[in-house]
Image (cartoon, rainbow, N blue to C red; front, top):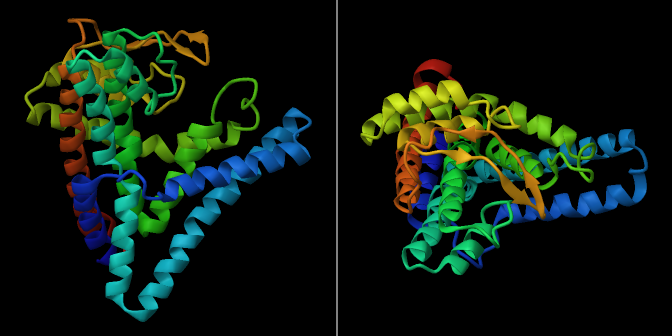
Length: 322
């Protein structure tokens, strides 16, 4: 029961406070561990494609293990003193793991800057939440980037962490965040990371397989609740959910594109190189700034549904002992 109460309280804290700037975040420490580990392993053992792959696998296993063991140990010690202490600490951990408010805050910053016709500032703000080059993007392209980020991260930033927390508490939630962070840092299919990051990328695909699909179904329900185009959401989801190099990333994007009757993805520049990606959705109308707000509406309703479904499932179906 402690985990359920901690998740509910942590979710509420996330909605209220988000990630305050200037306060150290555990994911930053995970990122630092990955960066330092990569630097060390490349210096001592990355001469061939095989050793690059093995080094990346070692880094992934170590980072994931440490990210689980530390919070698990902390909560175990806290629980041995008093359940309330464990509840408080696990609440803080759940709050740190979830990213609902942070997604809204960062994307709505782009929204307000575009609304005020501050395109250069909006490009800079977008660059904080996407990996693509943003220097020369138009207003429509910046808007699309913000919508895509919100749509894709409904699963990665909110629903998937909830699922892992409900299965194994905050420690498993941090394990998921470690997998996700590894993929975002070394899971690229370029010359530098093709072999070194392959294990991390496949691990991320496995971890997100079920959450991505659950998130998409919940977003379809959210589309109906918000009175967006639910038929379009279902149709585009069925058609375009695999229009991505990742087997999971396009699921919620496809629902969002169909719900809003817009087209997402397509070509973008990454590190100065043009990357052609399949489009998601039909361009029934031009994308508009207000679509950023609509995407956030989908994010919030989906996150609430995810929390409710997760708690009910744990109580009635899984019957996992607490």
